[in-house]
Image (cartoon, rainbow, N blue to C red):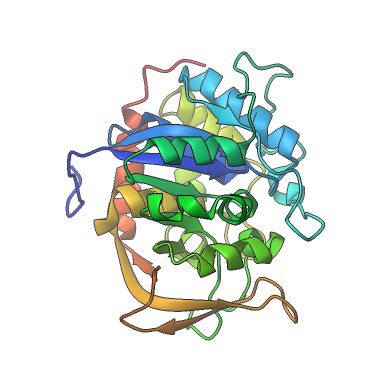
Length: 315
């Protein structure tokens, strides 16, 4: 039984912008099978891996889950910089210890991610939230090219940032923001309400320990898939073996907000000396809700319960 969790019945209409990536892929498994979520569009972006590999992985996950969601391939490089990747932790194929098949059944849309986002949002009623799991290149291009769409975006929930000056945030930078800080600056300047899930939450407060990861292989086929991916995805720099849940935290911050504590703030960004370094100023009129804490016990229970429901999916 899950306690103290927002279980409201309404479905969250979302666009997921992602660079899958192990943590992105696990998040997609939960998002695409959650009864409280209606995913209208998946868009891919360069980040953890190349745009081609990220797009293949998104399509492959839809094949595995037998879900039909439109997929649009996004920007292959950052707006004004050479794109970095994180294959050193996600591995060459982007899925850790899991090697996907060479071909996929599903295909991408004929239009790119920016135009697919624009058309989807324009056709909506101003009730489509964007869940951004990677660098925000697609969003930066979207808001620059189509500023008229800003009023149709009620909220962007994103994973990224490591706010300077806050206790518990010693790194002061995050991959998703530093990959394309100019794009993130455009998002900040847009005035769209933002929910920021900093990297600290998934790595230090809601991480999975080795025992939990080992248990996944005995749950069901999707649990074994996660176990295989996680086998080469341990967080570097920690004394124990742990897996970060950054992107799942971002999803749950939208769908199950009672699991999290947030605080309003203004966010500023360094574009020059340490590109991607984020600073926060807590204030009541801030347009960013910064996630500061997670109810770890009920977060883990939520993961367990949702995964158990997926035992009918065979791989």
